[in-house]
Length: 251
Ligand code: MF3
Ligand code: CO
Ligand code: CO
Image (cartoon, rainbow, N blue to C red; front, top):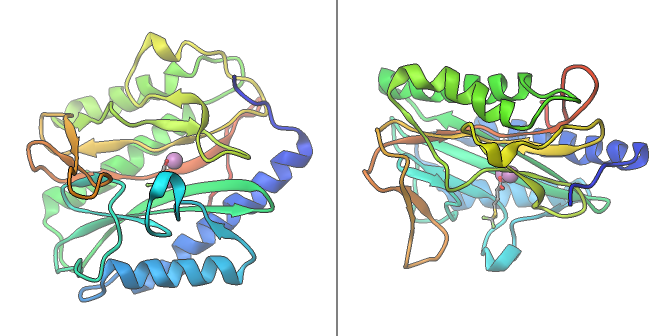
């Protein structure tokens, strides 16, 4: 069941989304060569509580930290660690979800660390563009599958692959609500968009030809590309309107 948010709920989602965006903006200057992902986790967790909010990932289905940090071939759900120290040429997705006044805001960005290979820079920039193409396809009265169609149309020309195992999601009082948002075209997303729906668009794009991913059997969370290729991701939480979708996590 897809929850249509009331005007009061939309206002709370704007506040939660804005804070999530502020956490990302706050952490950006710390994402440098030599920093550990655990340090980034601690800083984000502190900033979040200082602003009266809760880090949603912490203890979510047993997730052990407050943010997700996914480096290079890690697709998503990377666990911050003192052992993971950012190196020159790395890319790292930092995924922030906060709960403010009972409502969730979810956003992520792939940062480039030091001097990054130009092919990887292209992957990152195109992944961000793919997210915005998906968002631009959202409008009340259209089908949700236009998101995946737009992303597929744009990404198709580069020889990358779009991860299908994970998708975007409705969001509100719950971290993950209906609908499941696919980043490729599928009849499963033949769902009519209505004003007041709120969901994320968060494409994961692998540089290699295989979209296949696997989850670490050691920690139960870390998702990597099966072929070892680099993967990038960007995410916004958006509100469906009669015009352009409103980005709730803008920064
Ligand atoms: N923030 C992720 C998303 O975009 C979900 C992370 S779940 C966690 O949906 F448990 F790994 F934190
Ligand atoms: Co999300
Ligand atoms: Co997220």
